Image (cartoon, rainbow, N blue to C red):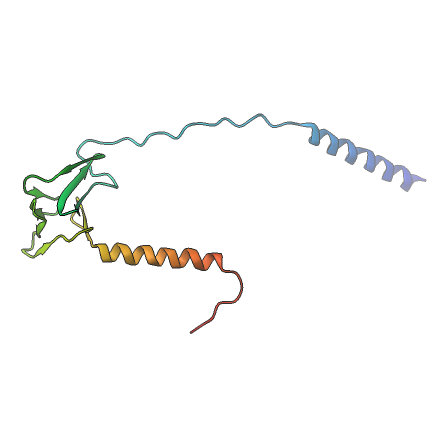
Length: 137
């Protein structure tokens, strides 16, 4: 008899606790707009670069793209001419080809490197979609 009353009491407490927690509603979530990233004048942002496109050297700074009209010096001492000639601070030279990009800090990314990176990303994405065993070889 005593065991029966303890079991009944336990059942009643559990049921009331579950029903009380099921009725509690969470307040609705507040949706906040993303904060704009501050742009500091004179500081290169992620997309700032020099690019050869359609035979023209284009400079993107602070979200504004314009054609290069005079020689430009980058932060590492590299100089770029309006024709796409690049002279490094060490004295080496190169010519920008169609699709080549150079960051404002002086890092050159060729169109072949971009194509290779895109193909590697595509392979990685496609491999994630394939389920099952993969062939080794």
